[in-house]
Length: 475
Image 1 (cartoon, rainbow, N blue to C red):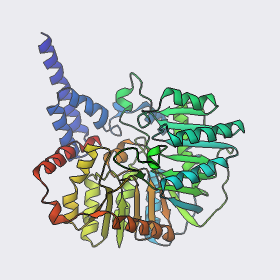
Image 2: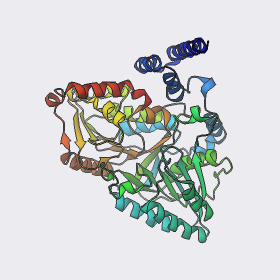
Image 3: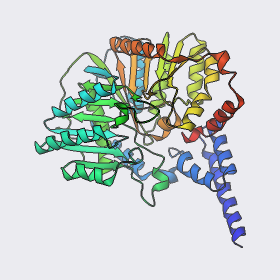
Image 4: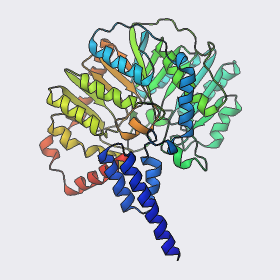
């Protein structure tokens, strides 16, 4: 009898899952992968689909409570989220990209910023701590990964000193990304007066609906005037080799100017939903920011609460607009069909495309899923370089020496559809050319893949790639 009940339950759940995939699947290839996962892995496949596969933008029953509240927040405070600016761009490409992202991500391009590109872990944190030391009113920090260690302790003692001098401190961390962070360590910060909150903690009853939606942003705001964003987390792996991966090689940005207001509003929205108590949309936290340079910067914020996949739209549009070249540095290059088609068109149109990825990886599944795309990309004439020494973690794109993007968004399903991400678009030729120069230097120290050699890889390797690509919808 129990066996009959189990078979009946399995059959019913499997049928419902299959019907849902057919009715609400976002793309045929992704839907096919989920169909196979559900059929091959009894019960487990259904659970995986509920957690990782449901398109909550389209299916109202499965919408996150947090997502509904975030959209209500936007409706109530949209007029305070966007300050329209009349910007004159040097070319139509920049104007088109800026307009798209203003409409999809709700942040306008801000003029008159000072920008520093930070690429060395130790130097990056030296500059971060130097700016934190200057704080007079408040410090706001948000990271996907907070890990105990040398940097964690250094941050603790600095913030302790600032709190003793009546500087407010607010900290957000992702509950999954910072899974190793002990309650004792969190309590240390709370005991000195810092307001510390996890983002989307895993609670009984909401586990299935929050596990797949992580906040991958990295943001620091000092007094509402200085900001940092990019790919760097609070972890010693950026300053010391903690594993066989070596030091994590990443790119970060220092911002000073009106763009900090946009970046701060991303933090404020996340903090409001994590703390459920403080709305910081006041002049005390959003002061008028003076002009500090001549660089145009646009903040791009994407997430499952948005009406549009802004990060994906940004990347595809940059590829489509490229006339001479586009260089991409990313640790998790797992493009969807739309991204692949954009790359095909650009490559066949004569645009030079260079891709810099890590040779090592912190995920077997992500590594081999990424490798599964390389044969086709190499056939198209796209140059692929593998960084061989340390672990490349930068998320950088530079286009035609005119526009550069630095942020947290990867080239994968997770960053496009499931994670809360933040990029900074820099409309400035000198900075774009500087990033391009560093990119070329890194490529020169990396391994260039050869198409004829790559397609001769063994059957075992191809099988690993095929299996990993099959599970790419989970990535």
